[in-house]
Image (cartoon, rainbow, N blue to C red; front, top):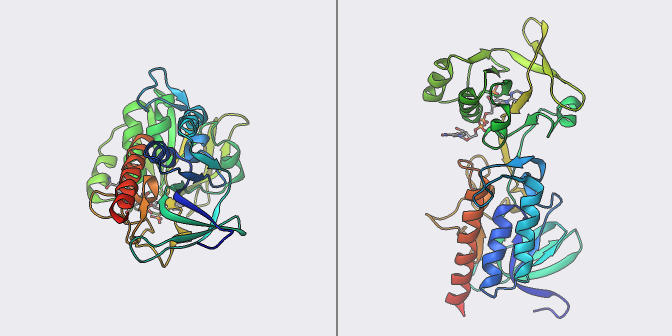
Length: 315
Ligand code: NDP
């Protein structure tokens, strides 16, 4: 070890439910974990309002409060939570090897194990009106927020499997769902397309994009534009669900860790192990399918157990 470089047993990158749960388990196993939170401390849930589906909160909980609770629980077992971002990383290829990390472009640290919990970010359209109304009726997660729009009219944007799934899910709760496609066909699988077209309260508008989300503090409607005819019209709705895909936060690991075609990290079998010894991944960064706080938390537990076993095996 170089003299001035801090050596840490377990570095956790990311502070969503996966990262904090990994920390709780790693700390209790005496791995003295250090979390680097990233710029969005608490992760995606800090942009959600109420979370009703995280077990243990019978009355529901605000997303930011849930993340504060998870942080407090991790700190209770002496996890060090450090606000900062890993800006560079160099993974060792050999079992027992030391990984080197650079924090915020300057500080260097060494880690015996690294748990990656950097999550994924929902893609948004990028309209100023959409950004202004995030949390005020614009959401990127029907499973998280759909419940609040029961018996109301909502819009879903996107034509992939996520949009098809979210639209059919919302159709069970809402009065009417309008699905906006920018092209004249869905990209979703045939089975999902059939579900979309066979749902009576789900209308599909082809070649249609959002021009503006209407409303000051909360969504009151959307102004849509037909990209063929350029005709505009207003549709009154209270919720707008953007489902145009997610982007896993994996730029840092390109060229070092195995990723699938969509740049999600690949883990081995049912474990959290990546292709580098002592490097584990949990949460949305390795899961494009379930993407729930509770499944992320579960995989964080797995990563900490895998890290503990790995360290035990090389000692
Ligand atoms: P996709 O990339 O498959 O689809 C994104 C959709 O959003 C496309 O229809 C695309 O339109 C549309 N889109 C992108 N940008 C814009 C924009 N600016 N304005 C309007 N529309 C836009 O993402 P998904 O999240 O749907 O799926 C990701 C992966 O996960 C896929 O492989 C999918 O199959 C998989 N998945 C599987 C599920 C399952 O099997 N149950 C469930 C959910 C996802 P266009 O088609 O014109 O490009």
